[in-house]
Length: 152
Ligand code: HEC
Image (tube, rainbow, N blue to C red):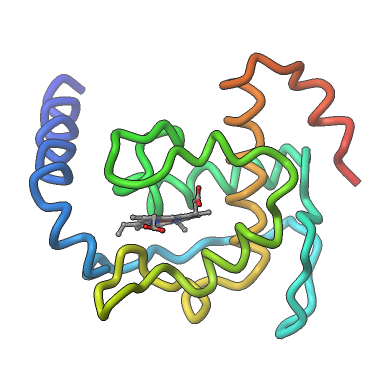
């Protein structure tokens, strides 16, 4: 247990010092199992989170976030400064979110964030946003019950 904690801290230090490597997106993305969530159409991208407040989606999204986004956006979506703090997003930027995740961010031939379009289906992306929604609520000290009520 203590050992794994130490390894974890070391890994974090590596992330900080190797951010230039990560910025090229060289880390293999981890598959996301969205079993249990309502299926969404392939190729027809939604513009609003269909899983908002869904506890199963939040759980799946938390794990997917930690494996694929945390190395840049920070553990529990709390930014360490490498990339924006996603807890700031709130509930009104769904389309912005999905477009960023699909396309990533490239400028002048430099990849700041890898594109996830060919990596995840939209079920996985919306599950991640569901988790980020929850972190937004916690960050802003909002009532989580209100978020869970939004589940369809
Ligand atoms: C290699 C590092 C890296 C990884 C991995 C990464 N991002 Fe990013 N992301 C960034 C950076 C850097 C930016 C800011 C880019 C810019 O300069 O516009 C960004 C921007 C964003 C934005 C726009 C935020 C805003 O406030 O405008 C969203 C949304 C986002 N990322 C979501 C994600 C999600 C979800 C994942 C995981 C599936 C992810 N990112 C994985 C580095 C990363």
